[in-house]
Image (cartoon, rainbow, N blue to C red):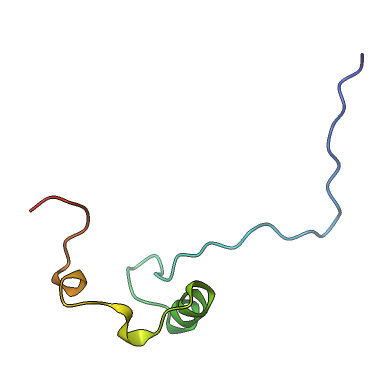
Length: 59
């Protein structure tokens, strides 16, 4: 049985990164707004605990 290969449509775009930071680490405001809209959260989403800068469950 011959192996079948998926064909891609010419000009089809790949997925876009959800990353709202550019390579220098600065926030991209347009991308941040898009991500907030997609996730259904607002600018006031961060709690004081989240603003501490700690990620994960470590102390």
